[in-house]
Image 1: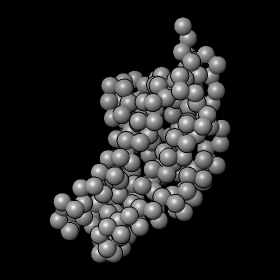
Image 2: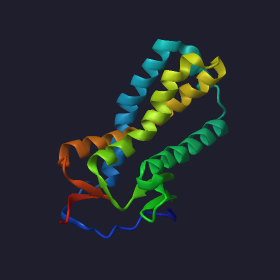
Image 3: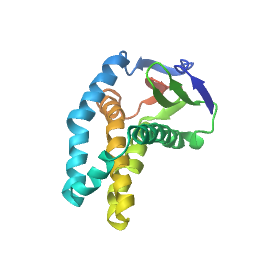
Length: 191
């Protein structure tokens, strides 16, 4: 695993017929943000409020700005570490990079080695599963204070996972089942 400030390096592509999955990251981030604001966040809010009432959501609104900012920053790091743990060898390989883009204020985890399409989708879904779905399922068994914390974590991470969901959509539409992924590229493994 390597730590990096700035964009990850391009991998040495070893795939046959390699095609880049995405050409325009600004457009991808904008679409994912709009999807998160317009679809994911309202659905998660509706699910939490419908199940537990407005009380848990109000507790999130009572946070001071600095508390909200620290929670969000910490959750972004945890979200990316969870992606890393889904990489081969739990991310402890020379192909895994944990990084930060100062200009965008974004953390990232990327794997520059070869990964199957299914593994890629698993890695992309891991933070959504662990930080959004599991808290929702565990909430009835938690004290009200923890339920309020889990409400915030679940909804914020769901919105943060919108980019992952958008990329999964692109993978399912564009990448054949038998293809493999290397960084931002997909193709087949040379024989």
